[in-house]
Length: 264
Image (cartoon, rainbow, N blue to C red):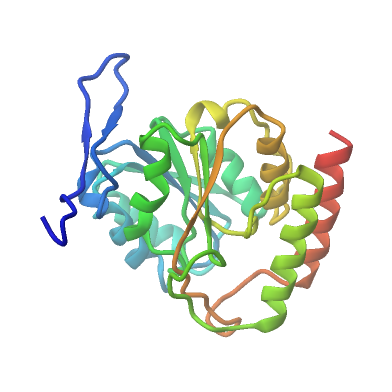
């Protein structure tokens, strides 16, 4: 007991349908409180500098049941590095595109291969911290949500200060998406989105690049599912450090908001 508040923990209930389920005693304090139940899907393109670190970091998190990595035609030695890493842990599942097709294409292949009850998207660039999986899992484990977005703009969790006009663009895209979907999200362009697997099974991903973000948001909004948003930290990188998204992807996002909200 601290300050009259009892220690908190999620504990597994006896299995019924063969899938892990949880009973809420209180919110988990860390990933250590959650047994394996999570498929992590990681699209990768030319990330040889960070891939070893992020893979090891993901695999040390207790909820991770499998790590599905889709190399999207890397030319910098990332694929060779991945093959070496895969020998160290049977939870790693590798897929490769011979030619670069885009983040959406990599996610399309990775998400359909996921087998755990919950599925999260993880970038390979160290901008998002796997130690925060428990924050995103908590609304799912306590049966409050079916889909959870991790917001870089909600709450008071720390984030690196970077490009002002990027933040303006992100907020504009999110606002226009919200107007079309009638949701009140704060960050649709976030990498961290986590789903019950049965939700993903109802969605066909069409976009091959960064248009995946407004597409998946529009398609989730049309389903009869519960959507939550939680604050996450963000350690963004600069273009000199390997950031890939640009203004053309912002234009594409606007196209996708119109396409998937009004013409699908």
